Image (cartoon, one colour):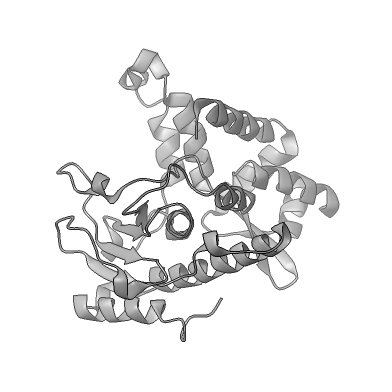
Length: 290
């Protein structure tokens, strides 16, 4: 994302908060984070009609500050801390003429307050997970965005490719944005970026190409666990725009289901071989459905 796009996203984010009801809604959601609240309960807390609240929640969702999930016929909403981090990063990037340490705790405290979330002791520090596909333009990009949101600080998500594209598939970025994900840091990149001594050490490397027998993992050093989750390539999707959107939504659902299972594994009670076996089970399409 270029500087102009970052500025537009920041304007949308701050603009969405520049209204009393929306600001109140966000504060209520932050107060219960990481739990969610039904739309009706948010409307009650903000003392506004339900239909009015729906409009405000839609604005906050499009700004990337909250996320929505369906529970039967109801919609629940949760504060999206990634969106708040992006706003704070935007504000602090040029702080004190490139020397943010001069600002003391002006930005550190709010950031830490937003970032704090309950974690199990075995998840400290967070696990680093690298998703791979050939071009790092669609499947691995979706997986990175999903794990960042679902992992909620317990996992750090990365993605890369053997032959990276110039940029992610625009349709993929558009869908992720529409679904409330922060896309500001998503880019196509080579797995060579993770080979240097200063690169983060990976705990898991998961390949997402649909021909797993032809895949291999780069030599990144360390003792990571590998897995293969073969998924269809959205670049091969054909049909009308509506049909392609439907297929992309189905791919998103498949990846989300796998990541939800992965993040719920009892890592504290599994040895290395058991974790590897569970990863392979997750990638088995006969076991995991959309």
